[in-house]
Image (cartoon, rainbow, N blue to C red; front, side):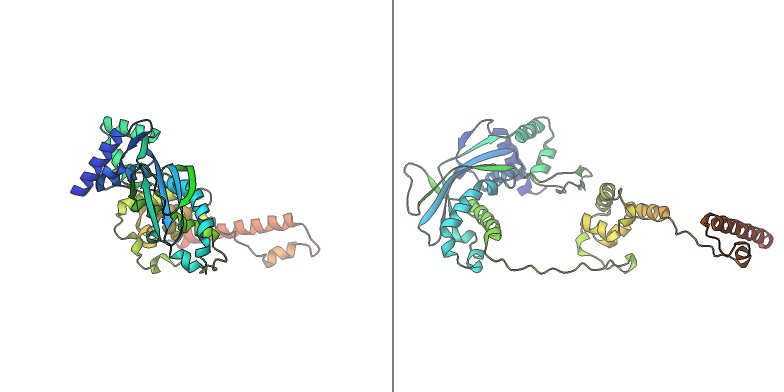
Length: 352
């Protein structure tokens, strides 16, 4: 393990053990870069909840936005800051007269300042993680916080042989208070510091808000899906580079278990590749796919064979007959006779 990963794991464990159960002030400006990264990761993992007061300014604007946000999880900040963005859009949109102007409003266009100290507290998930640390299960905590594994609900084989399965932690957030202020106003008696991470997060949330509020968005061109190619003609796919066969086996097996029960005949190799994120060629090499394909093909029912009426059969059927059961009986009898003759022929002329 590299020194940087070891330092980050140590910072995660230290902070997780020190965050209180109730809201408590802490000075984010005293954290090291590694400790600040650990706080971000623990927040995204839903193990700590933070409360921060910030001010957002935009270049060239005389009005700034100030608010207090409480959030946890990967999308908690965006959820909490959305009302501020909506109000900022109302105030600033006249200067963003074109789509191009708004698209240029990246992190460099915003100045985010953190006002005073932050607050933090441990969540229920954080309490569970702290207990895991105390019980010696630190690897489970580190894998989850540092996002080691496959994070869309499907399992992943880790290099040490364990299976990891983790869903994204959406989290939640809320805006505690908000106000418009003059951009040059200076609050008295509190420390103000630039917050680059906050500016980036605000810019990302602003961009998402703009996508749904921009006037007359351009149409998105769509490309029809390509026809599925035969397995033997399938070229190599860079998606599977670096994915061990053992991991591919796990992905294919779990995907088939979740998706192939209802209608196995409709499952194609390309669909499995798309669903698992590995190449179609590697899907074909897995024993899970081979077993499924063979079983699917074996269970496919052949079409019923039609037996035409012979001259002898037609001779005994009245010309005005409209009874399908009579015809069916004759056809069945004829088929039985033909099968018996075939068996006798094989016995007479078969190998000695």
